[in-house]
Length: 141
Image 1 (cartoon, rainbow, N blue to C red):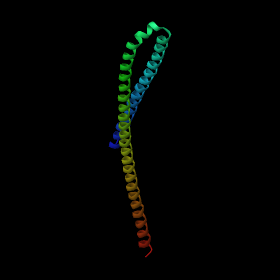
Image 2 (image 1 turned 180 degrees about the vertical axis):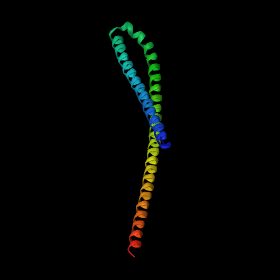
Image 3 (image 1 turned 135 degrees about the vertical axis):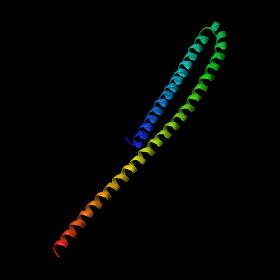
Image 4 (image 1 turned 60 degrees about the horizontal axis):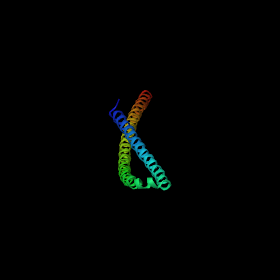
């Protein structure tokens, strides 16, 4: 196994790892969005109860203060998740660039080796042709 093969394997592993990390971050963001939807639905239910029952309306104010804080924390968590996702995408893009760089370098190296071998084989064939020509001309004189 060449150095390039090991390097390519390493970069592929890193790309896969970054993909897994990004998937986990996106899953977390989806959970936060679902929590936001549940929170909004809960607020709608509480408002309906407060409108329907005047005695519950007194406690709605305290609930609303708690709800505002929960929404603020949730919004901050969503913002943080979005930033982590952006960073994860950048890390994935960088890992992918490194992988491609390694693959291109390995392909260039393989092409150089192939060209060198083709030149060597051509030189051998040329030498055989010249030797055959010398024998033919030396024997015919």
